[in-house]
Image (cartoon, rainbow, N blue to C red; front, side, top):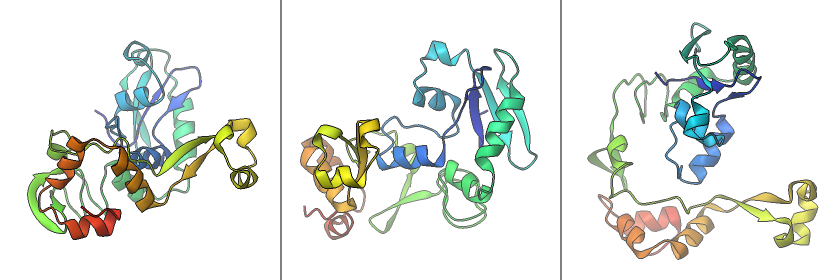
Length: 225
């Protein structure tokens, strides 16, 4: 059962899981692959494994309360000692309560379930759209046809060395080694770029969201519709 904290290993020293940085980057892109941060399959896909290759990796769950690790699927040599070293090194000095909420897409404190806000909740709440309540749950909305596609929305973009300005090269001295750098785009500018490129059909999905309010939409995105 996939839960916080999930990871996979190949018995050759490689241990894979979603880091906070990985999650933030994927979220900034709109999570185009709809990854579940606690899913072994999502982790495998994220690091480039095919389904056949994934089947050759061990799958683990680490309980941050008991500090014990259990195997969901042990298909090769038992390498739990190496896995534990990797996990403990990653979790060292981190706020586990925050991570538990973060990996389960919660905000607030002391929540379980999914997409919760506030304190001490176990269920999944309904969503708010444009500062107004609705009867829609995120888990249902995210996989529905009415949900707009945000896969083209970027706060972080790759700029190759040939496209970098002299100022960018001076500020990013490792660009020659990397072949470029990751550029952070201002939030409303990112929306402007996205809106100019997304399809008419996708734009209509935004405009048909429950409780749509053009003033709120403009305040957040900078786009007047």
